[in-house]
Length: 126
Length: 126
DNA sequence: CAGCATCCTTCAAGATACTG
DNA sequence: CAGTATCTTGAAGGATGCTG
Image (cartoon, rainbow over all chains, first blue to last red; front, side, top):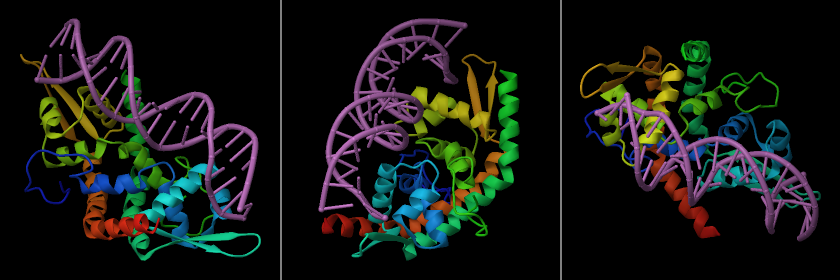
């Protein structure tokens, strides 16, 4: 199913059939967008990401980076130095994702208060 | 942290500090975007959504609708008829989300093959 | 019809300790 | 430094039966 095309049958299957959900399967988890955004600014090494992202464990950083690399959004380049050093960088594909993410970012900043208000109203009423 | 503003310190906290992650906390789950997209076309009643969204359980449909209503993205209007009937509809706020979602949708459709290719390459290499 | 109440399973994610 | 290897837990989600 497409968000854009409205000339479609009623039914929706998650993942198979909804393009937006495919994106969420790529970067909808807890850490991926944070990494993509940081790498959107500049190349980072592993330890830099680890320090920059508050609260992430070494394990989750490794797993998330591996998944992003598999999907072609980032590259991993190890340097044979001592001590070892591994750089992570957005691919061209990864960079194209920054635009849509910016749209979401703008939306969130614009409507943040509206959402909080709705929540307060709802929680009050019940 | 903002995706747009690059004049910011290094560190990122998830949820608190990243606007994109806030959106993902609203609609990043398995079913929310599907519902938002369907309601973007027209008002639906509960049973219509249940039939339209392949694989969703009554329980998850109820929970997801409730969360979306709490965040002010949709409205719930029960009709005192027999048999009972409840309509769900996007709010103005909910409608403003369709734009950013469309951006993601377009991105996914454009780069779907690229991602599949990257994945094949990666899985081959290992 | 539109749900709620329970029980159950699975998996994302965290904690901790170890290593090339 | 940049990871693995285990173990554990919490929350998301599913299955089923009941009800105003």
